[in-house]
Length: 225
Ligand code: ADP
Ligand code: ADP
Image (tube, rainbow, N blue to C red; front, side, top):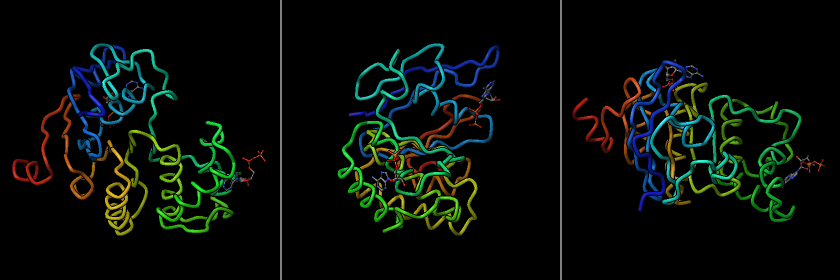
């Protein structure tokens, strides 16, 4: 079954059509990467799924349920954007636990989850470190842990490694793929980097000018560029 379905979703910013009747389905446990040049509508797609941008026509469904009128924080999504915006005044543990506290997860359960996530993202025992003192790659790992903490049914990543150097990106992508498999996470990720998309994705969706131009496994998309 598809966890996420977009049914002819269009988004317009004034006279400008950013998404033009986009159909897309993401199956449970699948990692789908949306690839495409700047301005092709990738971020708008994520924002429409998240409920951060209103859609003009069509429908977004999560687990079969139409999301019209469902506010962003009720959609059960984990979001991680390029400018991850960690809270500089909170330590690593406080950043990851932030959404859990808001969801009234008890403190000891939250602390357990934080410790577990830090293990998973390769920063064991980092709870008390200051986020300001972390490297860019470490900050991305913390942002990822924060996005995963509430156990979202769908994790959405927007250019998650945009600011990192290539070596680090390649390493993180390999680690993440393994992590998502282990956890069974369903992922919709946006990138303009073909190598990143092909390394991470079970399936690639190529966007051009607000439309889905192509979709297939990385190998299929590679063969007919
Ligand atoms: P991408 O993520 O692929 O770079 P975007 O979804 O950001 O593409 O943008 C798609 C189109 O919508 C572009 O033409 C962009 O200029 C336009 N756009 C994006 N956000 C806004 C906005 N807030 N107001 C007006 N136009 C926008
Ligand atoms: P307050 O004391 O106002 O309730 P917090 O509870 O958010 O503020 O934070 C208190 C301290 O405990 C902060 O340093 C925060 O980073 C840390 N903290 C909060 N929850 C956790 C957690 N689950 N795991 C690790 N550290 C946490």
